[in-house]
Structures are given as structure tokens and as C-alpha cells.
Image (cartoon, rainbow, N blue to C red; front, side, top):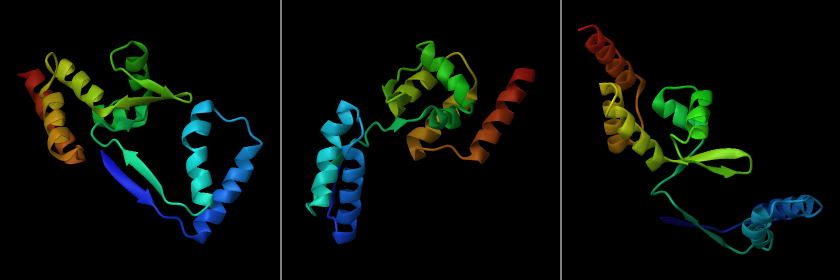
Length: 147
């Protein structure tokens, strides 16, 4: 977990005050009022705001998951709907923990190609998969299917 402290200057305080005024008359979700309005109001008063970031298991959008799995966002949405990949909703949008994507890939790699194993290894080592790694794994997978 990482902790960051934001120390607003007068320009940030003015922007936060404008934002707080513009949000005042709107109906906001309870979670937003509880978590974010106090932060906005503190910044408007030029008080520092400390945020804890949970980087141990970042949350991804379905598009992010699709890039990792090399599938479309709609395929990821189908996997979420079918319960293959767990998610939670933030507003109306799904969020998926990176560890849940890893678990899915591990389960899938047991009955799939070497591509998933290589992708998992790259995610574990670098947190990302390059296009070159993907293309190499795809070629090897195709070659192995025709042997």
C-alpha cells in the first residue's frame, strides 16, 4: 500500500472550491459524498489530503483485461457475466482485480496454449506483455497446433 499526500496551492484550492460549489446542487451517490466530498472540501481549504493507494492488487477496466488476455472488451464482459472472472461494480462499470485475471489465466492455461503461460510469466515479471512477446507466443502456439 502506498501513501501519497497532496498539498494544495491556492490555484488548486480555488479549483476545488469551484468543483465543490458545482457539485453542491447535484444528487451524488452516497459513496461519493462520504469519500470524495471531504477531500474536495479539504483541498478547497488548502489543507493537505493523504490518500492510501492499494497497489498490491490494482483494479482494471474490462478494456485493460482485454488487452492483457488479447480479447475484446465484449468477450471480457461475457466472462464477467458468466462468472469466469469476478468483478465489482463502480457506478455502472465493472472493475476486475489483477490477481483475479491472473487466476483466470492460470486456470485457462492448464487447458490452453503456451501463450497464456508466457503471458502470465511476463505479467509476473514486468506487469505487462509486449507486442513482440505476444506475436512470438502466438506463432509458437499456431505451430504447435499443426504438429
